[in-house]
Image (spheres, rainbow, N blue to C red):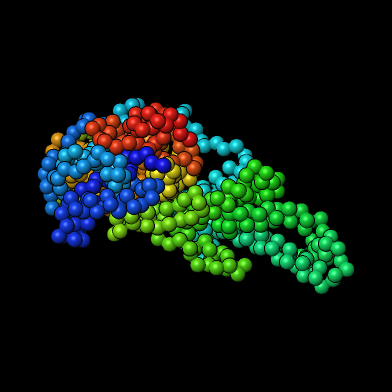
Length: 559
Ligand SMILES: [Zn+2]
Ligand SMILES: [Zn+2]
């Protein structure tokens, strides 16, 4: 089946040819392109991932072409530039364009996305703010697993158990200055970590106890062939009650809960048990969601949960030592070095680009870096207005959490040490490659994240975000370095949008949620300017999609 083409799949043939040419200087661009086309035709049509192309912040003027300046490459991060024209007509040629955020162009200017000109998603405020509500069901436990993984509590025995040494007596209640209050806050956080880890440890041991109990009654039955299965169970219970000092009834009440722990562990792995939080007790006591797909959903999610837990809480498996399980991390590195998939596997990010770019690498950034082409200047600097007053909410902005009053995008506050964004890179359906998936809900108006990459200029033939004003028109380039926003695909019915926001006098491009539920793929509209004169098809699959001719003509509906 012919795949539809998505924007993210469109890499310029030129850039691929350039990559090859770098390896083989004798090869011309055209030869390189033809080679990749040939390779492509031999490959499965189900392909590729890729990131966004060139976009514009919401306030930017529409369709401003980047200046045609050429700048030197910096630290190997900036792409090679070219002015050659490239073929784009055929399906195979277009398939070829997959890999990165590289835009397909008729000329040498960068393909630029434009931000949404519709109204911004309504920002949160005291009246409009709503919490993410989930019905009390299987969803509740799964939501709390993700919340705990992406939350501020660190789980792992050594770090938390050592921290309980802190003496509360150092906090003098008669001298409650900022420092003293900060100390009690620190102790409070550490106590929460200790208690979370202890609760997880208890659930691990109790789930393991059930495994041991089932083995024990088998042994008892084997040793006493005259006993019925019920009698063997009663004998096992009797041994346990004797050691624990509990009555049969007390133990059986507890076993109802412990059996739930075991079922959760068997389906979703130890990781589900460890990160389920305190709600797991009532979930198991009242069997909430067990008849509603909880076990099946945990089984599907186990790998996704392990990837997030291993990379964000590298010590969590040390809790398993007590039941003789391996404490070895299965997934190492940055959380977004892994691509999770519906078939319960996780593969390295680089491997998902192997086909188009065998030397693919990606540096994960927390914030933008400024290309040396700007020398000591940050082109994102805004010169009008008071840099400490937020132009959106009118409140004071400060890099110090205690002085800051602007709550527009709290993740921008340097001293806030925000929790990691609850998102994962995952494989997409319909022939798209990678996409970004929400693990927790992101309410309307809240940031998915800042569009982070190399702030540069003069990049041609590649996907870039274009912004700035006058001489300070700049590009944000994410091909080799950036953050998870690189993996957000286009959709004609997106659930987020790009918007400009000024933080302490520096313009930031934010991806803002229009209402994203847990599990959804996060999408954004790359803008009509991106698609104008671009001969490729959109893979979004939306009924309103105007950029997929074959879909419109021959595939009226698509799941
Ligand atoms: Zn504000
Ligand atoms: Zn579309």
